[in-house]
Image (cartoon, rainbow, N blue to C red; front, side, top):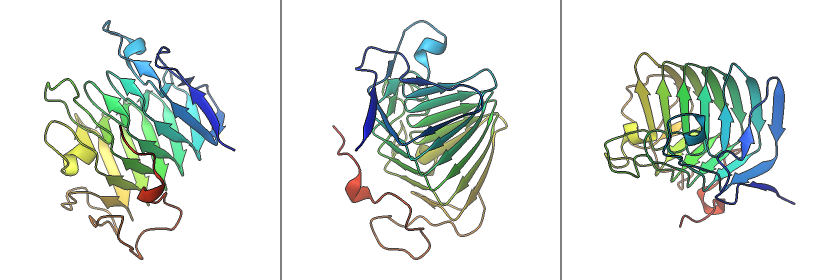
Length: 212
């Protein structure tokens, strides 16, 4: 059975990360961090990680969370590992519909980002899937597809790097793939099509929640 953690669209964060913890096997949904006042209450509706926490998230789904920054998850000055996680239909008024990473480090393994949206306010912000700012991030065997921002669904709408951020990508599928990120074994083929270069642990698009 699924264990659902819901913010009921009234709580700023469904989950706040604590140091040296593991979150395993939850559906995290309906967080609503769109407080007009600057500060943490406008970041990370699904999950907020900050103040140097070290967090591991495994087998979790982040679905239908809204924030000004980092709809599904916002990481600030933290070390975060994501394994076998799905980010679907999360939205940000500004940057990072699925995930926003600032001044931290993250490793994503076997994760799928699908149909997340940035810049719902129409102000020119980016990174529908993931936005990286002054952070070091590594993607291994991940899918980024159908994420969007002000520019559409190109590569930068899937993943956007800003201001000194670094990204290592290997064996991943990224819509609009240009090769700019480098790495080994990366493709831009629609993941609905079978590919021997994608690990079977990925969540098939057919099993994802339908977007509103």
